[in-house]
Image (cartoon, rainbow, N blue to C red; front, side, top):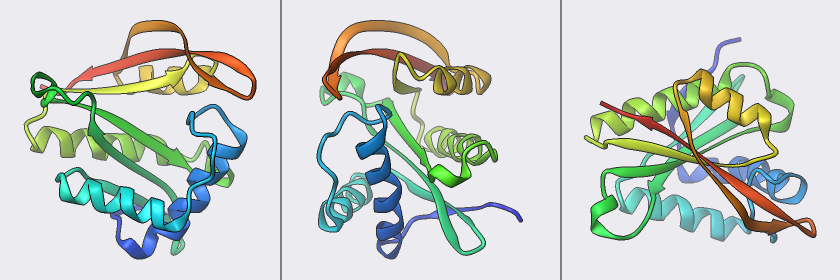
Length: 165
């Protein structure tokens, strides 16, 4: 069964919502506390579209099994060639190459938009994600202590970077 990567549509947002809400409730992969509503997820999708940022999904057997996007890294004009990416895979589909397929597509899309660098910000305890990013050519460029708080404990951020040129 092959994985199809395509641009997301507003109709995909309920499936995206299922994936992201699982991560919010159960992991430190995302440092939100409150589950998103469908209208909040649709607003995120629409904002990406308005700002010309991609929002892609991975589809397997007509089911959304992952998604990826990128957006503004920081809001000052000097950062306009740098983006921060997000990739999430449905909990039942980890280890199938979906994440790497999504990130590779995001990298190509960023290159086509003449962006210079892509950043991933990862919980320092998520060794699997760190190794995954290294395998794809990202470099660990920073460890910032106690930048987040979730599940009643402080969390460190690891910044991973890939140059796109």
